[in-house]
Length: 55
Image 1 (cartoon, rainbow, N blue to C red):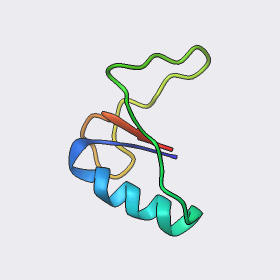
Image 2: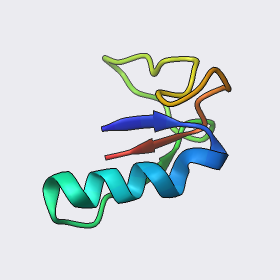
Image 3: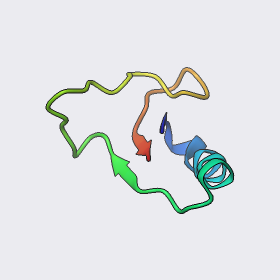
Image 4: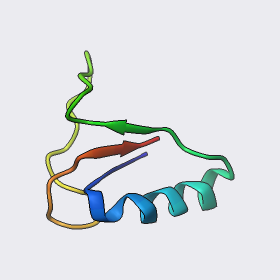
């Protein structure tokens, strides 16, 4: 699972596919709320704001 900014979505997808050998789901964090989890504010790969969840 990766929380990433827009510029790192492709890299996160590639890492996910390499690790799990399956296509991930992409969730827009601005349009989705989670009951038991608060997504990180920063991208996992840089200091920009996290906009997408690759899972």
